[in-house]
Image (cartoon, rainbow, N blue to C red; front, side, top):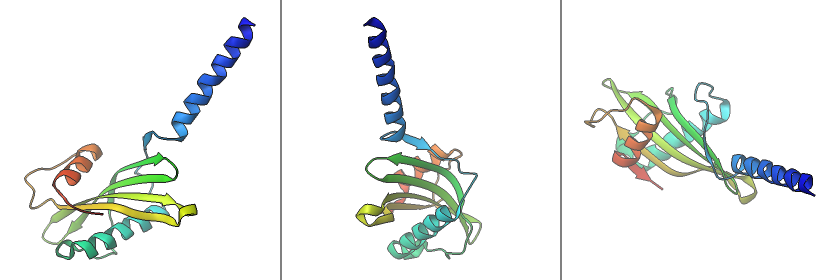
Length: 144
């Protein structure tokens, strides 16, 4: 009976470990590989911000530099993207986007929040993905 209890306990630990990996936890995603879907989401974010904040609009054909990406599985997939775009006059815009993907609910990579910050007008800068994400969320112009 003791062996059975040990086996059941180990099985329960494995199930819980896998459940925490699959649902709930925010995971960093590799930013060095930008696939077609990611490129489309970044352009969709630019279009969203261009419409919400025309004074900070950029062309949709610019090449973004992805600096932070996360993914969280909760009744769908919530992804975040932090990226930079070089603009005129040697300035850079910093972007943050939250994207919801739940195809069974007709939410296909839907932008649920987007922020932009003109780094030329900001006295602050950032060097890591986390710093940049926190900066644009705190000081940028955000829209839902």
